[in-house]
Amino acid sequence: MRTNAFFFFILFTQILTAQILNERDRAVLKDDILTDRFNNLLPQLMDRAEIDMWIVISREYNEDPVMRTMLPATWLNARRRTILVFFRNKEQNTIEKLAVARYDVGENITSAWDKEKQPDQWGRLVEIIEERNPKKIGVNLSTHFGIADGLVHTDHEEFMQAITPKYNDRVVSAEKLAIGWIETRTEKEMELYNTLVSITHEIIDEAFSAKVITAGVTTTDDVVWWLRQKVTDMGLETWFHPTIDVQRDSEALKSHIESFSKAKKEDIIIPGDLLHCDFGITYIGLNTDCQQHAYVLKETEQQVPGFLSEAFSKGNRVQDIFTSNFASGRSGNEILLQSLSEAKKEGLQPSIYTHPLGTYGHSAGPTIGMWDSQGGVPGTGDYLLYPNTVYAIELNTTVNIAQWNKDIRIMLEEAGYFGEKGFRYVNGRQQSIKVIKTF
Image (cartoon, rainbow, N blue to C red):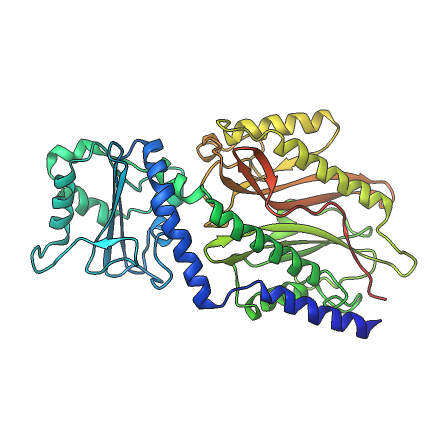
């Protein structure tokens, strides 16, 4: 049996790895997605934000988080000072993509600075502005959204000193435009996302198996580092250090912070343990974030105990209540409070802390609760829900287990997509506890 399992996992790994493109093909896909976003998505976002010129400024190794998502596959960083200018002429339905830089920025953004003709970079930027006479000039300044606040102090000061006084009052925060760019997913990206989430689930399946876990020997930290090594071996990256934690009948329920930041690193996994993982990967500019559960069978057991399966179903029920409240134009705080109220009326003990997911793991968009802010999150929680966005549906519910004489916490997280037709999971969700048989 063990030999058959070994060959099964070799085949499984080969199939899993086959889904991952080589570096050259990744670059082609990344640039294809970027071209589509610039030509088809960006004009819509600029119109929605009512900004006809967007200026993004960065210096090498201190990139604006937005600019990082605009660089082509062969540009790993900005060069010197890179200034990107996007000008939208809605009447003519055109979008210009210019770089006040010595080079074209890939095939999408054209260099518009000849240093021999205009030695001063700021001077050339002013010329571009005056030639187009925009009504609103958006720059990346934001109080609540760090990803939309990428214009550093020095560049902001020099920019404002360079432009002519008539344009001072036209400079506005590009917060909504920057968030829209970061949070909105295209059809091409969603095709990629499905693959990415599938890979994430398959890695977790392997981690929560007898191939990796030997009861009484393997520690939670062993599984954590197996995950890290697996991702590296596959040519991928993790965007945060994974966690593996244990709930069992002999130990009291840990607080949320104890379960994660203060968890024991060397907890030996034994039969009867309810395991939980928090794991996410990065691939071609997108990220996943996933929490799932597994149970280590005792020798007398053939399946997960019914009381644990029933507890898990309550976690799924909180997910259903929560995602049913997704609607365009609702704020993150509205969705949070409505969902908590409905779940509590059903006798559940929920906690919701969902965040936007995509170009960044903890991305820009509406924050829908934090584990330590269940009454709402000022600022980021007031932002509205827009379609074509992805979220880490992250939450938990506390359930009393009479058989263990204690409470446990069912902690779940899955990538979910909100589109024009409503909510769906990107690639399904966990609906039952995984089984680990180590005997």
